[in-house]
Length: 214
Image 1 (spheres, rainbow, N blue to C red):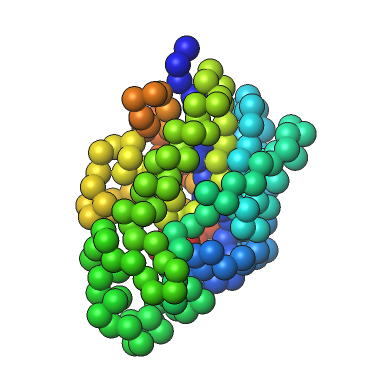
Image 2 (image 1 turned 60 degrees about the vertical axis):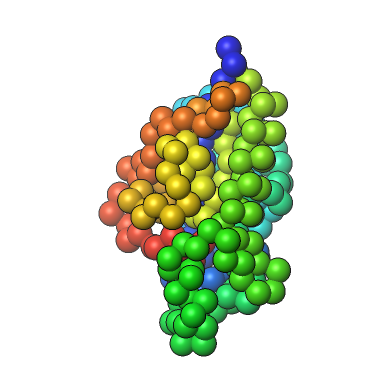
């Protein structure tokens, strides 16, 4: 066997998700809704055989992963490489504030300009894709024949979907990135394949939040 099964999951909801405030690398924890989502996720995955759990080191992802790991007494390995895209000076601001203060940069962001890099230490989409592609290969190659979990962020999941389906960085997004939805990928040395995406049955009709504030 030369493949690794991956559950790729976005963290639970935070207050800043509700406020449409950009989080990026800022460490914002789960709100009450996010804690509930994490518990529902853990219940939904309780019967699955899972060999390892990885998470971004940011609290919203790590604490979501802890809910999964606690049902099977597995440790959660913190991976800074699974962090959200660094959005520089956009971080901490709402979409409306960004549109008002930085209209030209906001236009580049909306258009998904691949090489646009936010001021203040930000990453371009090209940089983000390179980071995630390298990390995905490095971690999955260590778990051949196993089933692993990655708890991460909306921007990272968007890249994983594009890598698995061959979508370009500028292709319009037609896939969901809801908090704690279950996404399934298969890794082989040739790359990622899509198995299933955006399974939200454990969340019933709870209102979804847009993924772009990650």
